[in-house]
Length: 117
Image (cartoon, rainbow, N blue to C red; front, side, top):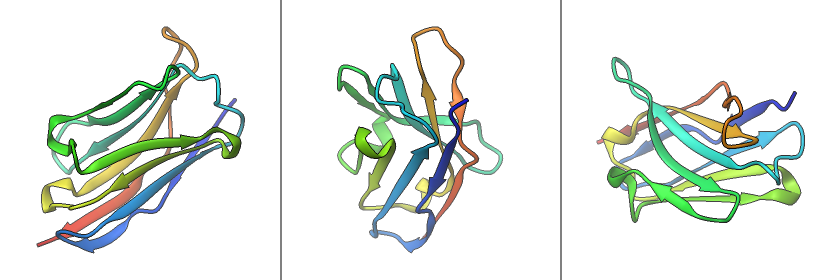
């Protein structure tokens, strides 16, 4: 059972950058889908960025041109580079991965990001 562990969160000022990492306990190089989600207090969890096995990436409109999702399959690690951070980017960030199109989505425990104005 692959487990996901996020790191890299923290507190930054608006305009700053953070890079989140998500390390898998086993190989995820053949996983169909990997993604980053976030959840602010009192709000629903939302998708931020995703990457598919064919290399295709998708981004929420609110983070396009500021966030970049990438992966290093040799290290079983998923990244989220976050630049030009805004206070509204604050929240708990979770990585998620799915082995196949219809398999269960695995979640990490989350890492907190706080952006101050």
